[in-house]
Image (cartoon, rainbow, N blue to C red; front, side):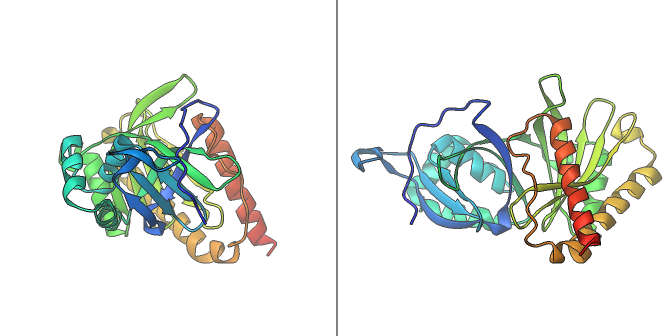
Amino acid sequence: MYQRGYGEIKMTDSSTHLMHVIVSNLEIVDAVAFTRKDRVNNKGRWTKQPFVHLTDGNSHFHVSDKHIMHKLLNNLNKDSMYFNAYLQFIDEFPLETILGEALIDGKDLVLKCWVTKQEDSDIYDILGFSEIKVIEWELLSFTINEITEYLKQKGFAGRIAIEEYDFGEGKSSSLTGTYVKGNSIISIIVHNNNPIIRARYINPCDSAMILVDTHVLKGSLSTVEAKKLYSIIDILVMQLDNLNICVMPFMEEQKLMTTKHIRKFRDKSKIESENYDKIINSFRSF
């Protein structure tokens, strides 16, 4: 049985890491909007600090800060709300109901959460999200809008946001399109004049990331030849479908290397690519 954990969270480089969580796998274990000031002993006055416990079947996730709860709902909902509106909502409706509807609304998404792991447990405290700002489609360039519609026809749900990366020279922000179909993810990162398009897959066994393929283009995304751009996208979709249908059903128990604690883009990509090689080699010897 899981107890509500309320220890103070300190964000340090050594203790926090990024996790990709498939929203459709999440279930609510507990969700309350108000907790006691003395949370450990359940004493003192009530405060508008929540306690939320989610699970995806493998790991457990806690939210115990009202600002993080507000950001979680905005990451799930199609229409974001101001913080004051969130405070008003939890006065009028049960948080479990609000969160349940948000999980349905965001069922096709992947949450990119900054987390810290509680000692000697499989519980992760959610500290934030990698998406700095979600961008409405109508504000984007014609090219990324067309890509979003194209992938939607192939069954991928899209989301556009400004996200943080470490390309080796400290943190930087890049416009990122993330397209999700089941465990398959296609990302388009508009990084300077070298857009990065890559296909990744979330291993169902341990949620480790598998980097299937990466393409780095030259020039801005809007100047890339359309035939070349959509040819790359088609290849990535095919590779992901082949992995999902032909390979992964036989690799359900395959444990892979995690990259949750790695921040640098190059190092993370290297290990995730090695995960793909391991899966393919295991399948060939199956």
